[in-house]
Figure 1 (tube, rainbow, N blue to C red):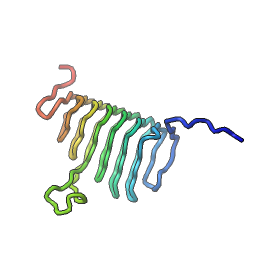
Figure 2 (cartoon, rainbow, N blue to C red):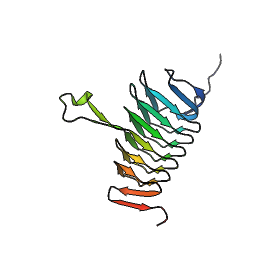
Figure 3 (cartoon, rainbow, N blue to C red):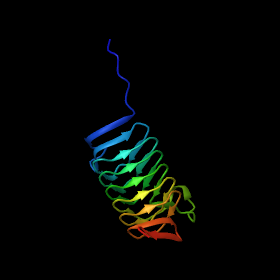
Figure 4 (tube, rainbow, N blue to C red):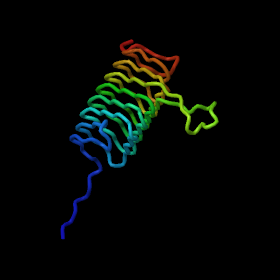
Length: 174
């Protein structure tokens, strides 16, 4: 009788297509406690060097597009829900409990639970997003930005900026 070795907590992915033809994940490390959920017509591309730590969720809904560049790191408890389009550049780092939603529920609708307003999110290259941040629909974060822990981003953040809140930004190097 063979004794099975204990399963490691990380799954290493060399290359595979999950569920549908429009899904590509290359050379990644995904914690087994994390969840990837891609609906029927989702288009997903995740570059090599992707790391998804424990208890994180990535959901890409029907007809939505998620692109994550190379060497991106997501710490514990991150959540991405994509209903339209989210693009994340290369070498992005996300602290724990970062939330990224490209949609809101339409509170004016009779069917609030199933009616959404969405707008594309763009996150540039070499961006560092601190813990407990929330990136909302329509956000556009330029290259080389630092988003301070706990910030809520809604709108445009210019490249090479440290972003604290909607009223407090600072050019890197100031």
